[in-house]
Length: 192
Image 1 (cartoon, rainbow, N blue to C red):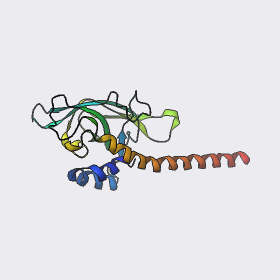
Image 2 (cartoon, rainbow, N blue to C red; image 1 turned 60 degrees about the vertical axis):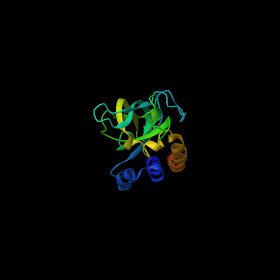
Image 3 (cartoon, rainbow, N blue to C red; image 1 turned 30 degrees about the horizontal axis):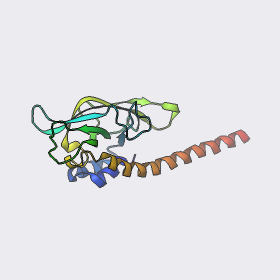
Image 4 (cartoon, helix red, strand yellow; image 1 turned 90 degrees about the vertical axis):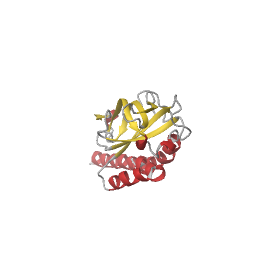
């Protein structure tokens, strides 16, 4: 999954880049995208059941979001250390104050973030990729964990479209080559 790295390079804050990029580059963190939900199918624009509301932390007063989400078929989720999570952000109290907008927003959460559950592997159609779930209810996410910071709230769709295409441009052809090799190897066995 090239996406979260690409997203960080293009849109991350300096602090996010300094923290995540070295860890992604050396393999300390494996990234994944949390986009597909149980009711979304392959519709990447559908964030049904992946909502967050801008709020202030009840103890510290820090601005952030409270999110609930259910994602499935997330490639690399069982082994990933960080997820780029697509959420539908709303701001009913106007707490963004003109910096950022409602709509598709991307949060960067590390495995172990309080309330985040990155589930076990599931194997749809015996796919070779590690697929799993990413879920959470009422998860507190500070604005520092929103990709690009508060001003990038509502800008997630643009980010995903630009970077997901690049990742798919690598993974899909690689998967096709792997499948073709398997067919060729299988046909060679049948000829013997």
